[in-house]
Image 1: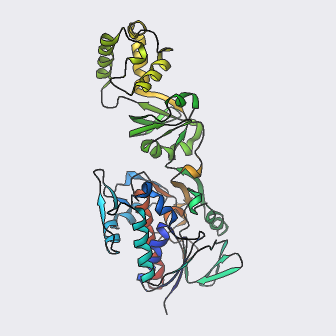
Image 2 (image 1 turned 135 degrees about the vertical axis):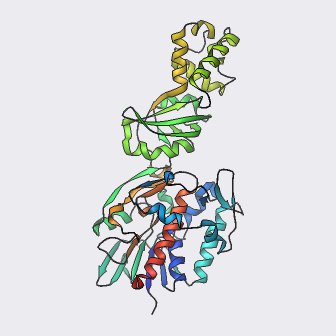
Image 3 (image 1 turned 45 degrees about the horizontal axis):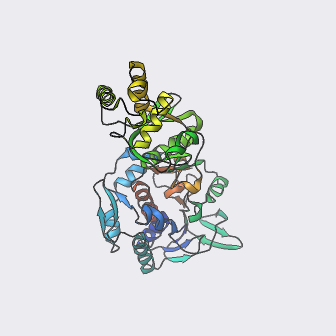
Length: 405
């Protein structure tokens, strides 16, 4: 008789788990709280679904589960989807997308395969409790009860609650005795002093951005920074947001707007610009190097005004040095944390020490976790979906073959 598996959550990791378990011969039921499965998949990659990355390196992943990277190393994203009839393409930075260019193709491939395998999809089913009795597991959706030989918790984290991932599974896991590390928004904008960024709203600039915690640089990212009315955004900010969410107001963001030049080169460039444009308003000094509005705001922040003649303001070495320091590392205070509605993923979740190498909850045989339910998250670039596919597939096989383990 085939094992009965319940999968809580019909997102990326849940669908991968359901498919893997069904391929092993298990009878699988997915319980999804929304009217349809896979809503978050449709929104990823701006609707194109950045489903993986060819440059799989441990430095792109964070969290307390020590075996996460080993699980991903054994997983082949291209092959996983090719076997479902989905072809992929890879851009110059190693990011993988469906060849169709639409996230709907990814969800279709997963749904089609699950349907072919006889996976039962039950939508509008909010799991409100879990209980183990003997060798059986019971999931409760209000007054309705479902029983199974194993349960796979794949309900995601707290990010993007409009997609069904509202963190409602975490209290249930805590009630079962698991340690849940406080969920925090990740891959999201970083709030800062509005007065320092509002004048730059909508502008983008290439920079080296560093997270400074209690005066110490803990991570630097290179890429495009976007200024909003009250926050710093862009991919490099998203990759630093996990740190700022953890350390809050102990953190500052330092922006180096001239990351391609040495200190000596920057000093010479500034001297040359002063010679060439000394009679112009100081706000025009940097327009050949940076977006004009960026230059105006930086000059004003460093020298108090952008209207006086550049040569007049910068004739003295201390003034030039101060402007250079601002260009190489102006600091923005972190004033709070973005909301989960603004976040793409969750940092936090079930602590690594609560899980075995098989992603089974210690002391709770038959309960497996995957995806964002686990304290594992990645940088921008398809890394989080890689973890979802890999961990979901892994636990699906483990749950279906548990009697043989």
